[in-house]
Amino acid sequence: MPPSSMSKLMTMYMVFDALKAGRLRLDQPLTVSETAWRMGGSRMSLELGTQVPVEALCRGVIVQSGNDACVVLAEGIAGSERQFSELMNQKGREIGLTNSNFRNATGWPDADHRMTCRDLARLAKRVIVDFPEYYRFYGERSFRWNNVSQENRNPLLARMSGADGMKTGHTEEAGYGLTGTVKQGDRRLILVANGLPSMASRADESVRLLEWGFANFENVVLFRAADAIEQVPVRLGAQASVPLVGGRDVVATLPRTWRQSMQARLRYNAPIEAPVTRGQELGRLEISGRGVPPMELPLYAGADVERLGLIPRIPAVMGRLLGRG
Image (spheres, one colour):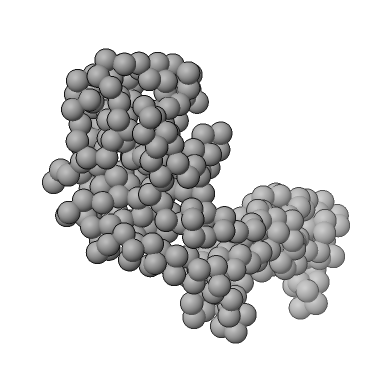
């Protein structure tokens, strides 16, 4: 779909990446070219030939959706907007945007400039996780530059507690869109909506869906990394069994009614032949149920179990042969 200005999330990912790598500084001035100055659509009101600090340009893109600011940043990083878009595509592939193609830094209409909802959601999460030191810009309600003050177009900032990002978009082809996020307690939801008929419907539908998400789903700790899920018998081992563990904390977002329908099935071969090495994969945990996405999680040995020496093995082997073990 055409992502319109929501694709500026990728532009800012590139800028934040350059800042973090030291290729750019927040106080570094960049010159406003004629190309940037002539850019139409949403603008930061930059003046031709002036030098503007990178931080101000970032806020101009995020809060004011300034197309002119996007072009200045693109030229400052790559020399031209076209070269910058090629870098956007390269970085997009690196971070897992499997169905995106960028032709410019602004989201300006172009038949080959496309993204999916999933890629926008994935990109939003990467911005939040990879650049916490710069993410604060997305929560700003307004920004003033060149004596022009503009409000952030993100309707969530005024309507939902915990809203702190991210980017709206609109073109005639794309309709009204929003990549938005809200954090309440220890949960953060990310929403992508596009193709809505008006600013009002964009705001109402986004709030409705996010409120529904918080009300109807919860984060559930299925098990902790060191929890012993099962004791698996070990044949000819120095210990009779080995704990089966997940190896990491497993937290899933599930419907609040998950307990009524969730099913768990443990699969492993027993007994396990000694020796056993801690971390060795021994089985799988399958989770399913109505409203629960199917999950299959690997399970590992939670301890080392050495093989019995020759003499201690004799009674165990004899017992097995005689049907006593």
